[in-house]
Picture 1 (cartoon, rainbow, N blue to C red):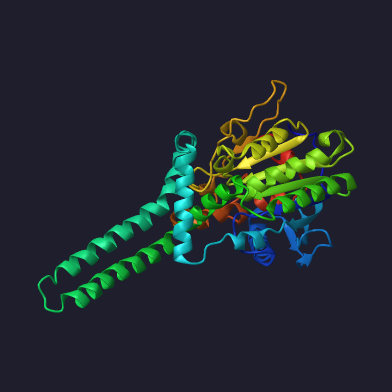
Picture 2: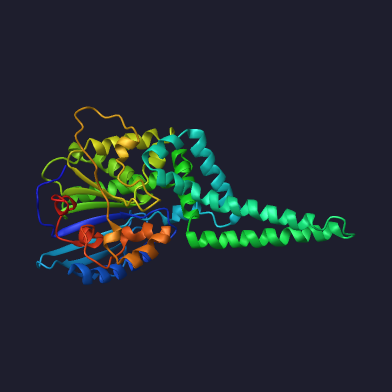
Amino acid sequence: MTQPSQAVRRRHVFFISGFDPKGASHYHALYRAQASQQSAVNGMSMQVGPRRPMADGANGNSSWTIEAVSPEARHCETTYEFARWDDIVRRHWPRSTLRLLLDMVFAYWLMLASGVVPAIWKLSRKALIGAAYPIMVLGSGLVVGIGLGLWAALGLHGHETAGPLAFVAFLLPFGLVLWGTRYIESRLNTTWLVRIFSFTGKLAQGQTPGLEARLDALGLRIANKMRAKEADEILVVGFSVGSILAVSAMARALKRLEGGGTGATYPVLSLLTLGHCIPMLGLLPQASVFREELGVLAQTKCLTWFDFSSPTDWGSFALVDPVAACEVELPKSAGHKVQLRSPRFHTMFAPAVYAAIRRNKRRLHLQYLMAGDSPTDYDYFAVTAGAQTLGDRFADR
């Protein structure tokens, strides 16, 4: 449901990053640099202030202000709050190859054992292929390495020092192929998908200590900002896996608000999910609490929810309604609908530039938060710093 049109003079953004060990300093630098580039495209003047820690009770969150003036001379001041959970990510971020392989086994076992593979295939074949991509790359390297190693070792059959030499002969090609496979993987950026799938599995099984308390605290902060009525719009942004956390935090905020956030006395409440992978959690049988939270959002008529996910982004469920995909049971009176859009990344760049970006799947996944070379409907910086609400900006599109 889109709220009545109104100018935004003050906005508060809650930004929830994806499954990424990088913290607020990285995302502040990214926003500042990309906002400067986008200003040359959209004609907005944006002054991004320094990053500052929030007051006590914000769980280490940081924020910065954005002073923006549109080409029509409309002013808007935005407080951009980075909702910290990178410390939790680092606890679940495999650093060694062995740990990565163990996480890979866990992720694929969970997908197969839970029976979600056919559902994912039906919703998004690219997402399922993306899920299988790491095992295809690393598994192929392992098979080739073992094959070449055995061929080299067996070639020494009958040699008087065959035992020690055969062992060395096996290790050399085997190690070389594994090194080459890891190099290829680092260029393709595929193991970040494994990390995402493994984490969502642990999240469904309650194996993420500290995250529930962090989401409760974030929900309380959102509710308090709504009650404070200092801003014209409260905008929650969930990027990648952060889209899952944004759903949970928003649902917990709505449960704390009188009337579930309805009424003209509250600021406009908006949710923007980018490159969402919500069904990766919501389809798992263990994620019943999360499906209930999706149901809370689906029944909140005062909430404007837009999702931008690109069909070329294999790390997302593009143009897939997350509520319907997760088979959330809703009463017939629930009339809320997630507005699904494609950011149309290909219109932001010259064909050669876009082709290079598309080859790097991790880089493409980050484009939701980055500038383009040409003006388009999807403009992350106009959404988060401009003088229109999320609903008003896309009302006629």
